[in-house]
Image 1: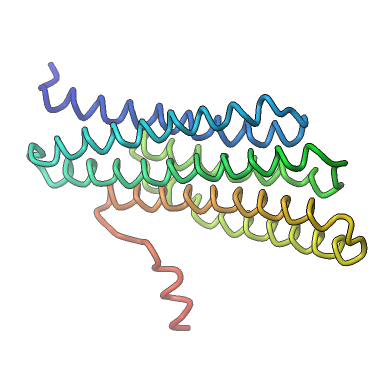
Image 2: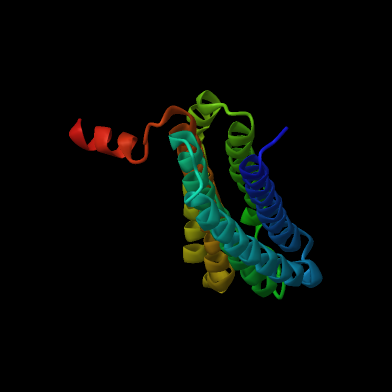
Length: 223
């Protein structure tokens, strides 16, 4: 039988996963609005952001309440990690809102061919986000470690999109406004992948008690 503390921890996890679902949906709908040129869908993303923001506040309140009751170091890590994951999910929601805002502007003009790369970039970033959260649910730090290098693939595709758009804007100044909007959309998706990587790093910390943030960057700077 679960203790009261265990039930509260379970509630914290449930809220976090609900927040993750809303964050993922927000990104998918923002990209859908862009691809289908649907203003109504773009407007709905803003409503979803409000839900995500509210959940972040609720998670923080529950976590702060639990901090004074955590009997074990592992419980303390879980509570702290839950707060950090919720922060990253809130920022994913912010990026979805940015995409929706740019989508509303892009819908007003003829589409550029580079927009076809956006769903692929979104799929890559969201796959990372899902994998990081699955690693959290499944207590699988090895899976979390394995997904971190995938961030470089997202970065590479984002750079390809940027180069293509920059080239087109030089050749046809009439595409500058649309090109800049798409650059912002692609950058937001790249940041979603960054947040997914952050979540994965927190999962490693939770289950291995090892902080691996910035270790790759520090190693590269020493080489």
